[in-house]
Image (tube, rainbow, N blue to C red):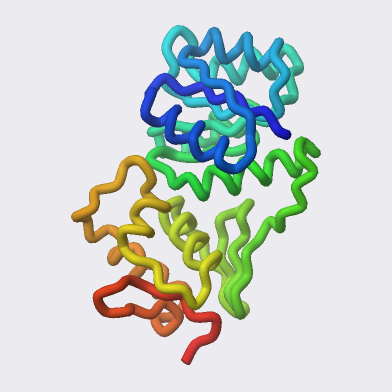
Length: 225
């Protein structure tokens, strides 16, 4: 059973992540500052660290730097509200294994946790690194989707929505379900953001592949009509 250290000072986010991970069979520990994150990661027995950038006492980049300088090879997934290219590069070039911008869907975070543990041999999980439905294939590592012979880059939100739809082909998913799974703890039930991102995906998947079910939600078809 894999042990995951969650370094996050926002209590609602830490609780949200812990609840989801425990429901999926992981053992979790929460710390709320950078010094504690560093000490637990260096001296504790954990299989992966979920590390928020904006920690008090010592920020996530500093925790990452000190751990790698001390040859701690623990897989690290960075969490941050900063979504600029420079911050992503700073985290990954500093030795982070992955990077998830806030707000995030739990399903995306869970997929990345499993991928990192599998790559590190942490839990023996043999889950595929891609999801395929018909001629649509989503690469969970690169966030690229291939439709037939054409590949497209996806934004973090497009990726999360695509993954949920592809994992539930031919099922009707309500807007509320999609909001909860893709926008997680930070969703507004009255928002039309699902409709906006469905339009984005239709441009890449083909308009006929994501069907509107009036009064109910959306359905990804295995095959175009």
